[in-house]
Amino acid sequence: MSINLINLLPERKKEGLEKLIKFLFCKEILEVILLVCAFLSMTLLWGWIILEDHFSALSQSALSVNREFSHYNQEVRKINFAIKTLNIESAGFTPLTPKVLDIINKLPSDIKLNSLDINRSSGTFQISGIAKTRDALLNLQSLLEKIDWLDHLESPTSQLFQKQDISFDIKAKIKNIPLLEPEINKPKNTGGNE
Image (cartoon, rainbow, N blue to C red; front, side):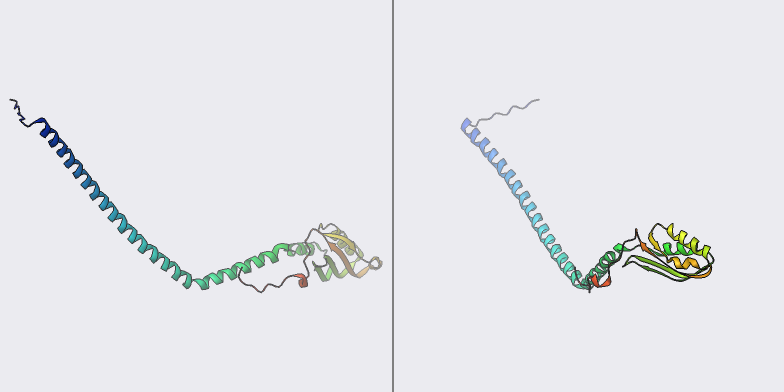
């Protein structure tokens, strides 16, 4: 069964009533939108206040850490300076111990060394001692000539006139090993902040 409603209102009142309904609908939608905007703005405001509090607490914490650990920062700077100085100083380092041990291990048994001097500032090598025989001295000279980091071997020929218990003194120039600067030319660093 269908019910037919009879509307006896005049057309002008119907249009006014429809406009009033649309106006009330828009008013309610605007109220909802304003309510949502107010809620969002309050949420953002509280979030901003909380973030500002956290930021100020973090700033205070960073300042206290900087004050508390400034001593450690100074120590780290000193250690970094020492490492930098050590790296600069060790730039020309070449280990000579293996080279000297190689020479000593290859020495003939009838050679007795008195001194072995390597001067990296002047680039000289000097070895002196006593050879039991002339052949032992000649073997030592040929051994030293085969060493790739020695050059211009000099030994007095008068040493070869003796047959036994020959006192020798052999000099050479160092090559392929960087020379060291004399100590007076090196700048004196007392340390400090860099």
